[in-house]
Structure formats: C-alpha cells, structure tokens
Length: 226
Image (cartoon, rainbow, N blue to C red; front, top):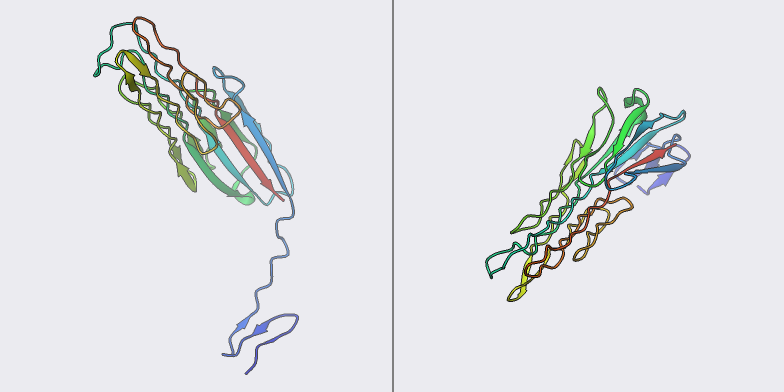
C-alpha cells in the first residue's frame, strides 16, 4: 500500500502509523544570563529568580583558573626547575538542564574569582559545581578543576610544564585551557572575562624570581527557555 497522510497521522506502507504531533508547547524564546567573578580575588554571589512562564533552564558553571607557579632565585641546573614553574590549571565545567517543574523557586549562584569554585542551586535541587584549577609546581603544570553533578562534567586543562631553553634559562609553562577559553602565555594572565583559563609562569633567569600570570575568573551561564 502507498504511504498516506492526513491532518492527524501518517500511514506507512507496512501499515504502521505515526500520530505524534510536534509539541504545541515548544520552546519559543531563550534568554541568556551571564554572571562572572568581579575580579581575580573576589566571587560574585547572588540569587537567580525563577521567572514565570519558564519551561526550563540550562546552567553552565566554570571554576576559576589558578595562577602559574613562581620560582625562587638560585642557580638552575638541567634538572632544577626553581627558576620557572609550570602554568596554572584551568577551572572545571559542569552543565545541567533543569525542567521548570523541578526548580522549587529562586536559586543561589556563585561565580568564583580566580582559584575559586563556581556553583548553582541549593538542595533539594541538584546542585552543580566546578572547582578551580591548581597552581603550577616546580616540575609540572597545575591540574585542572573538575565539574560535579552536571549532565556533562568537564575537567579543566592542566597547565604546561616548564622547559629548559638553554643552560641557565627556563621558560615557564603556559596556563591550562578551560572549556570556554585559553590560558595565559608566558608570564601572562588567563582569560579574565569568564572562562576560567589558567595563568602562566614566566621565564626564569638565574638569581631573579620569575613572574607569573593570574588565573581567569569563573563564570555562571543561565540559559532560560520559554
């Protein structure tokens, strides 16, 4: 038999039918709200008000990146990284969708500054969080932070390892990359405007402490669907 269709169903040639219509309550609009740590030393906290007419939200939290390591004066050798450390790790990421009926009311959020955790929600809602990356060390970059309780959880990238360029001169490791952006290049900060990238360690020169970059701030992104 041929495939036929009318206003209520499709009938296939094996006599099976499709009668499921596209939902009339489909999402028609989206609003995105972004909250960032105000500086590398502070957190942004507040309360998200549950709007009327909401169908659901998708929330992304990214922890702050951490700073690159800083070496101390001394006389380096090929096996001694005391002049340039590894880069800082990036913040982790957690992403979760919440249907509107599962959200009991207004919810707190925290967008961490550098080296701080970001989070969304309070019990009985499932709380998602993302920790900061770790500081670079003398021999390796700092490990990235982790996301918890998301539908998707992403570990932040680790900072780069310090490298011996020539005898007595060391290049610091770059900052780790987060899910939203890159880390700092040698001696520079991670992405400051949300995204939680790690800071980098600077070059090391005998007898001179090397510089380091600060990690990027964390961020909370709330996408509202109507």
